[in-house]
Length: 167
Image 1 (cartoon, helix red, strand yellow):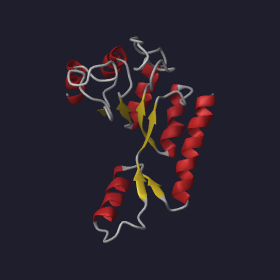
Image 2 (cartoon, one colour):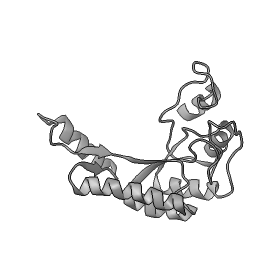
Image 3 (cartoon, one colour):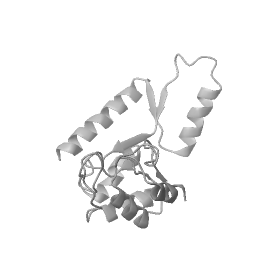
């Protein structure tokens, strides 16, 4: 519950920035295209709002899977299941854990898929990624990882998982 409160506080901060005219939370493809057109046609960027596609790094603030609808309505579009170590939905990287998904993950992934949300596999253990890719047929990305063959360590992705994400 504390993670939910902290996540909502962060979301409220982004909403305040938007209300002040500093930023714009981009919720739809049309809003994204409109925002990009505004930037592409600008002579000066000094007074333009920063566009944000909201992502959640580690899904702990989502207390139960159906609650994802509340987060989606507020603008959340990208979710990673974990962020270093074990979360309520999966094992992550950076702590030597190598487990998979937890029981509430499948319903969460189904809700995400129904909304067209993006699954970010960054910071998620290899086994958790394999299981998630077997369950989730929506859009997937790895927003900030490297190839393990080039940069060794559990934080990076092995070739087989890179290929599955590409596929």
